[in-house]
Length: 334
Image 1: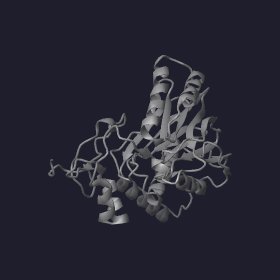
Image 2: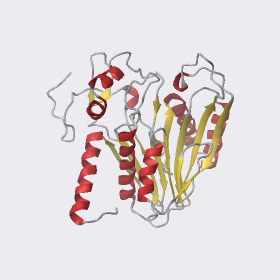
Image 3: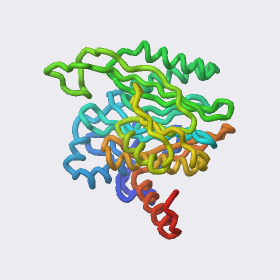
Image 4: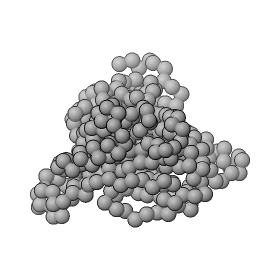
């Protein structure tokens, strides 16, 4: 282990570690350093720093000191975001994976490219393996040049055949005649009455009574969040899109802001910015969300902009720099 390597300025502590094989990103990930404990488990420096302050050393170390997560071990991920705005679409995700026992695992790429042309992206939350099998099914059809209508049918067919106890949801977004569009695909098994010896929701082996599954088209002029941190990100965005309407939850169980009007035409750069900070706010309130954060946007002309990964400390500094700039210029509304 090389402890003398100079770290980027946004990292205030840490040891240079390594990447898990399945955490390599299609985005540039050169500055994603890790703490590498003796048992070879992984946790990002940013997350270790934050969780140590937030929960105390003992809590953090308990999550990483035994039985480290393996590449194929089950784990679930949390906060995701999708926006369909006048100038294009914006997607965002964190990278946190947590095992059923509550251990933090190696970062996972939740924001994925389904195809480059026309630009189509997917972002998932929930159970890692199931969500990635779903995305691989769409990618295989996209490589054959299938239409978005075909991809939607393929996604629905996947959900209808799936019968495991693993909840997941995927936002798929694209351009349709130069108008931002998208779907949410969701799979949510339900157990009405748990057995007396049930080990809990995350490790439930009880028979499935019924399954909420399907797809829903996303509404233009809307902002959507999912995952256990989705409610917190949703609350943060609702303070920005003040005129938007909060819709009641449906079977997909995501959080929806619709009928955005006043700020529908904001720049995609600003939309990426507020998406990242909504996820940052979620990570402060839900320890199962965590950096690095990734965001991307697609203009109505199909131009793609990717940003990230942003570590927690970098995002925290950017957040306070933004507050300082607002204070200096007396601008209190982004």
